[in-house]
Length: 267
Image (cartoon, rainbow, N blue to C red; front, side, top):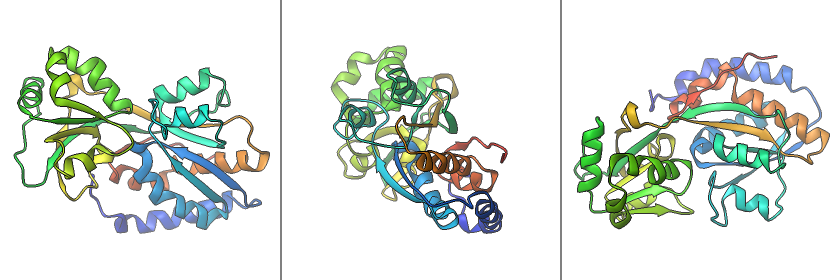
């Protein structure tokens, strides 16, 4: 359940903390991490737990998975910014891997994400439960906001053409750079917004109306990979952080942020 209370998982977290304390009994290090939007809420909740248990310090940066916005992850790599670990959508990660910026074989899937829609609280909630109703909702909306990241690329390049509404969407739909779609909808600058579920559900000013129908849904893996050039200490600490993100102990926290966690057994 998306909104399940984190307090319910306290006992599980204590188990996880005991595992961390045993697993991370090594010299503390700094880990420079850059992560993309869909994993951000999980990341912000988990990193303080990891730091407290491990003694490592995580230096966090945030950006879109793809695109040429100045704060996007690809743009920051192009500028030569230094990181030890990157977390982003599988397409963006594979692109960086092909460019030789990441350690081969270091990819680890953390969670699966789906695309959803939201409206400003108190406004009409269109039905998007079927492909036909989704198409109708898109055509009826006076203004639409969608992400400049992986989900938005899918909407503009695949979904809109598949629904036969590509030309109409050029008039009413706008790609949003450098802020969350939810913020645009909450301000009233767009009637209907589409983005990863985990990036919409935390806006109290919005009503989440559901995910795309299964027939046109895009499930995206958000994955971590190590960046070339890290020190041995930071690389080791980054691997520990990834093991923590995929541990059973924290899976309910990840699930509660609107993602489907990928759980791996502790080594």
